[in-house]
Length: 264
Ligand SMILES: [Ca+2]
Ligand SMILES: [Ca+2]
Ligand SMILES: [Ca+2]
Image (cartoon, rainbow, N blue to C red; front, side, top):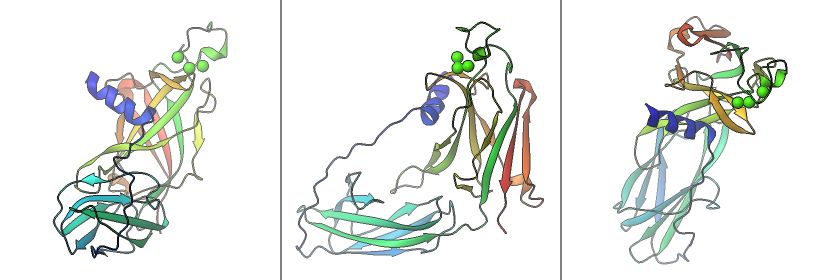
């Protein structure tokens, strides 16, 4: 459980960057050709879809990019000349998927396609209120005396959403999705996130964390873990579609309320 705790904390609170293996674009013009065929051009929020890639020669490395190859790099893998890439997105509107393949001779072929992501039946999370948490009103910053309000917890919540791990396989894992602003010394314990476009398909679950922040890093888990997270589900509410859902965990004195907008 200790390892899991570290993993979840890393997902939510640590920044990491991916390094590129190979930024070389190649010169093309070799007769190596690529064509793309998407299973849909209008996927819904969180919907998995595939882009089928066919090439006239075996692909040995592929670079999938959402920013015209500004970031990322090749994944080296013998992919034959017909393979599928998998995607799911959770931001509305148009997105361009760029795909660059390299053959055994190092020749490069690339194409891109546009998709337009629809809301579908996704809900939108507009707000979160922490009604109570483990040891609320007690000292999380003991460097301050109990007579000083600074001794109270500085709250930051995190959401992680189950997403595809990479383009080449269908493994899902929880990945950091949203990290809230910090509310110092308990404050209002209420966040308006209506401007953050937090859309999620209600069949998906959400991983929730709550921490006391000290100098911009997580100092204490406010869920008294392990586990240092709770999984929030929406599946019991898809018929009644309430504007808010309260989740209670009496064993850790946690009570939170989500404000939700349902799709029409
Ligand atoms: Ca602290
Ligand atoms: Ca404090
Ligand atoms: Ca603190």
